[in-house]
Length: 407
Image (cartoon, rainbow, N blue to C red; front, side, top):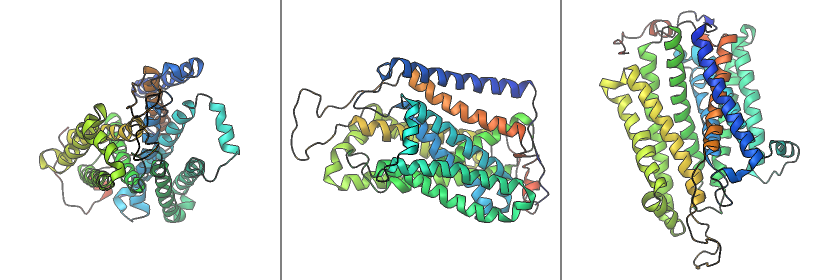
């Protein structure tokens, strides 16, 4: 591989305009959080049955994506795939940015952000939520150390060891995030050990899709070379990860269908859930799974920027739908308080909960995404995260020549 030269991205009107848009959406998120805090959650679509709404969907998506986007760096330092090593710095930057964006949404959705002080000073070690505080903070520290040993030439020899540690840590982190739902036995839609590997597969898929979109956007706007061969290899890997998500999703539902206690919630999600059923089959399975796999393996689209970008965007859209179905759909299905018994009271027992996300919730979630991207943009502007060239000749000079990409 040719010597890699890292440089900051250029400024100018284009960068200033992009950053201004991201800052505007970030401020919209802050304003949405203030609005909900000032008037209370009555102004949202959430209630005492749907307590995790759209902000949690965005927060969990960003946290899961943060874990998966680091996989590109792991391909180089852990699995020894040399062509991916120049992209490791950007991978680490995006991992930190997405996690900070997700945690910002999570904290601002508490209603009282100052309650985070209690969560950080008093720990209930029987709660998976308390464990995740350690995992999230530890992930930031580990990835920061990973970036340091990569960017400081004298510390480069420690990069493989730190990379292995970061690889293991992010697997544990995603396992912890999935276990929030897998260990929540009160909800029929959540109680499943397969949630942990499902979330790991989701993180790999969502993270790689986000990395591809950011890389293609940045290199397209800055005019830096980006090779066909490396894009195609990453796109094929995205297809494998998307297939893994479909596999574990099918395994989750087949396991639940086998158990009589989960038959009701499975019928709700798969057949009778209205918007949740539509999101599951149309957006999550077809648009977010089957179509991207086809796009990255059909020769007509597999080697084009348009095809790869479309596949990545569809994976992200399908991922948001999947997390929405898991989080909101799982709460909408009524609690089974006394299995095998009929419960009747004056309070909607056995009735599917209604939920319509408000603009404030959507604004907070989109603001978190914009905040993450703004962090990444500023990082690329002030520090040397991006190689001058990711052309095929620079990454793998001994490869077979590839056909040109249709832009």
